[in-house]
Amino acid sequence: MDLKGREMGVVLTCVADMAIDLVHDHIVSLASPDQPHDFNPRGLCCGFIRVKMPLNPGQVIQLKDHRRSIKVMIVDDIRPHRTARHPVNKFL
Image (cartoon, rainbow, N blue to C red; front, side, top):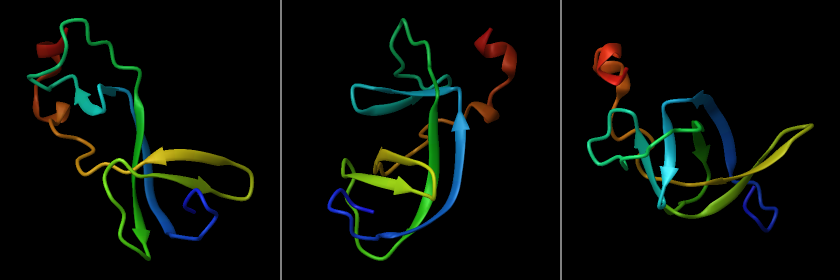
């Protein structure tokens, strides 16, 4: 639903990723070369939605099921740098 209560589509996937966080309205991962010096990710939930209407980056919508309702922000790139492509010891 959008914030006015209009149905917008169906959630296809959702996953929590502990290696990313939102920094100054930009998603940063452990593998991002532009991460802040003191970067300590709290994690974010990311997913895909099949929508019935165009959405814009920065737009806030509400995801709702039978029990829960959460506000989410539309972004155009949920994972700019993939940590899975780097050896784990690089981050230790």
